[in-house]
Image (cartoon, rainbow, N blue to C red; front, side, top):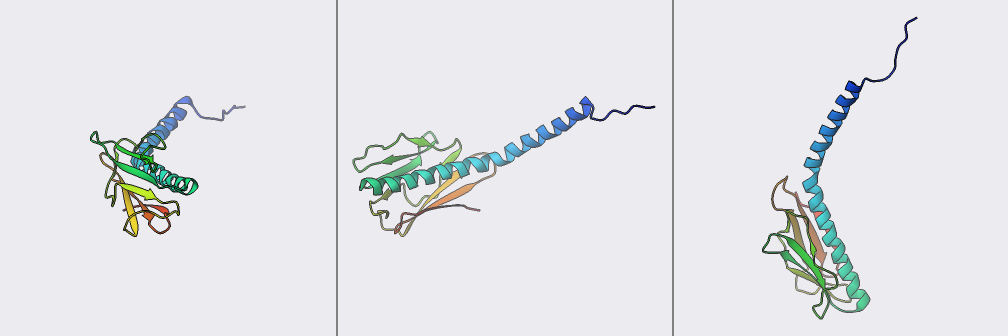
Length: 153
């Protein structure tokens, strides 16, 4: 009577693991730039929403100022009516910058509207170097203060 063994050899398991690791390494490289830009855009959107809520709750104008520093790092900060920062300065992921912005700051009023003359304000966030170019856009409506986010092709 011949006895058979069920299972895989160690060589077969190592080959399969090597293939899985190679596929994961490629996936990380392909998807990393897109996630940096999307996560940075979402962080700025969250801070815009928080600035709007702060203005309503504290009945005072609140401004989110943003820009690209001389060192190439993009930053943003929320400030109150007196010009004092409400939080520390935040930075976007390395290699991600503000681009194609219609303004350098957004000021929310206590009635949830946005100060200024335009009907809508645009904030672009893009990857500046390396990887596949990615660009996200935030739009802030003057009349409602609503913030929308979309990927720009």
